[in-house]
Image 1 (cartoon, rainbow, N blue to C red):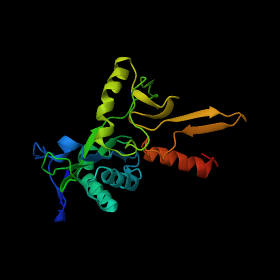
Image 2 (spheres, one colour):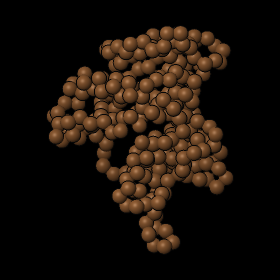
Image 3 (cartoon, rainbow, N blue to C red):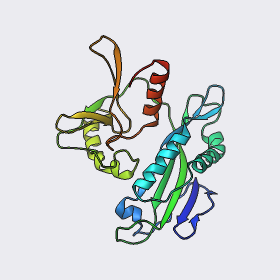
Length: 250
C-alpha cells in the first residue's frame, strides 16, 4: 500500500510504499467520531493482449478531491494521486493480476481520513491518505435484482452529501441493504420524496431505457445538481457516448 500523511503546518509528507498493514490511529481521531473520511473505487483491468488498463482514473481523482472538500479534509493534487495509483500497480499487478489472468481486475481503493486528535467537532489539522489494491474475481453473467427502498427510508436529500463519496452515505444505508439481501435481492433501488422518484442503486447509478410517446427509445437517469446522487464515472461515460455517437439529447 501507499501512505502519505498531512499536517496543517507542514503539508503533505512524501508518499511511501510499504507492506499492507494496520494503520496506527488514536481512539480520539476525527474520523472515528465525526466521519471525516472519503474514498474512491476504481479497477485496473488485465486485457487479453496482456496490457493493464485503468478506466478514466483522473475522473476518480477529481471526484475524490471534491469529496474531501465536502468533509473539510485537505486538498491534494489529483494528477499526483493518479501517479501514486500507477506506482502501486507496478508493484501489485504482476503478483496479483499476472498476464495469465486476462479479463480480470484489481480493485483500487484510495481513502483519505482525518487523524486529528480531539473530541470536539473541528476541521482536522492532520490527515492520512492510503491507497491499496485487492484482487476481485470476475463477476457472474446476468444482471442484478434490486428492491425499492422502504417508505420513510431515505439515503440522500437535496442539499445533502449524496453526491460525495463519503462513508456517511453508506453506513446508515446498510440496514436497508440487509433487508434487500434477506429478500433475495442484490441491491437497494433508492427512492426519494412523496412521489418516490428513482435516484440510484446502493453502489451504482441507475438507467432506464424506455420507448417515448413518439415511438423512439429514450435513455433516462436521475439528474445531478441537487446533491442526491453520485456523479458516477460510468454514468458520465455512458451519457457522453450516447450524445457523441447516437446524437442523444439526454
